[in-house]
Amino acid sequence: MGEVSIRELRNDGGSVVERVLHGELVTVTKGGVPVAQLGPVARPPVPADVLLKRWSRVPHIDLDQLRAGIDEVLDTRL
Image 1 (cartoon, one colour):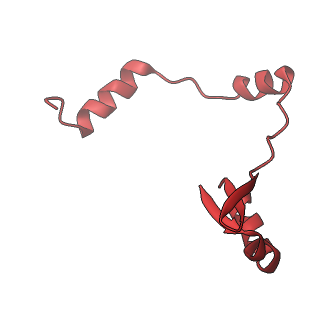
Image 2: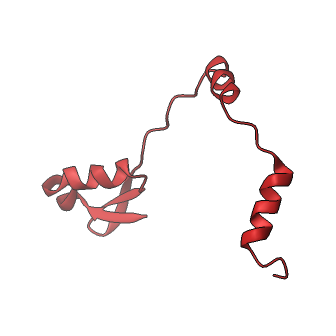
């Protein structure tokens, strides 16, 4: 979490908003005292029918084959 003064926010508001757009929660201070927080706006929820349509396109994963592939790459003694 970052912190900016009101003066910084006024003079460099664009870069502060860019930080928020990238997910950072920014506390605004006045005279060193926190007075506000800026954070990203929550995305609207995705409707169930859209989620179901997306999930229907997810490829099937063979878990046994996945595990075998992981075991080939990693030392199973760990």
